[in-house]
Amino acid sequence: MSLTRGPRIALGAGLWALLLASVVLAVTFGPADIAPQEVWQTIGNHFGLPMDSPVTRLRDAIIWELRLPRVLVAAGIGAGLALCGAIMQALTRNPLADPYLLGLSSGASFGAVVFLLAGAALLMPIGAFLGAGAAMALTLLITRLLGGATPSRAILAGIAISALAAAGTSFLIFWSATGDSYREILSWLMGSLSGTGWGDAGIVLSAVVLLGVPMLMSGRSLDAFAFGDAAAATLGIDVAQLRWVLLGATALLTGALVAIGGAIGFVGLIIPHVVRLGTGSRHRVLLPVTMLVGAIFMVWTDTAARSLFSPRELPVGIITALLGAPIFLLVLLRYRRVT
Image 1 (cartoon, rainbow, N blue to C red):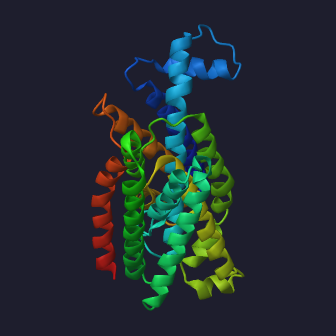
Image 2 (cartoon, rainbow, N blue to C red; image 1 turned 120 degrees about the horizontal axis):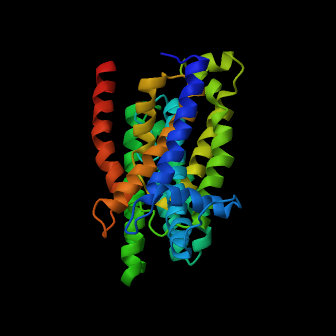
Image 3 (spheres, rainbow, N blue to C red; image 1 turned 135 degrees about the horizontal axis):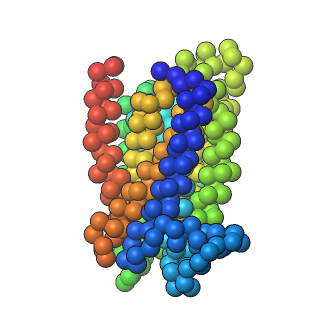
């Protein structure tokens, strides 16, 4: 199934409207009772727009300083992880590929924790990128040593690298962390957006824009990858160069996202498969729709994480794993029937 131009535009406009509404409504969830019009008024006030009745300073601080940046971080992480999953599935022609299952998220966590415990917290995104890049390189190397890149070999290699990186991370935390920092790091490793602010939102949204937008431009080339490397090369695509550029961009984006939100699994697996059911497999449509749906998905899963058991807060990675594991099994069974 492939959408024509009119339905594509309508779908895109509808998803942008749904994302905007999701952001505003998600900000209203929390101990303080906030109305949607107060969210609009606060945003308008900070952008210098004329508003009839500005909110109080306390409610302005709750909306602007606490809730809105966290919701934007969730949206950015969801968009980025979903895009990385769709790109990796296309490059590896593996329906089970995503940054978590191929070891990138665990590698990024290991790199980020190394920099954090070394006292270089501000350089955590660099450590996360280095960890994600190393994990990806090791996964590809093991896959090649096993005899070639098949989906099952890539997943097995990714699981092995992920377990190795997770063990290294746990050892570092066990050896170095003390007191409350132990609990905070473990919570972050399970995927948590607690305490994120405008600085984190700036990093996440900048990474998504600077890396995600160029990756969106690769849709036509990724469509050619679906017919194999030889077919793509006959269309004038430098297959090796494009694959390494996109894998590098995926590792960089995953590293930046994991450095802020921790290892949030299964978003890159769930969202592309769900979106394909509605849009088909053409990447020029699939990639932007996947980003928007991923952003909406993460806004609401993070809202559920901080609201379901209030005042206690669940790591959002627990909810994405609960939702993602059954879908992973369904995809695995469907792939088994196909092969």
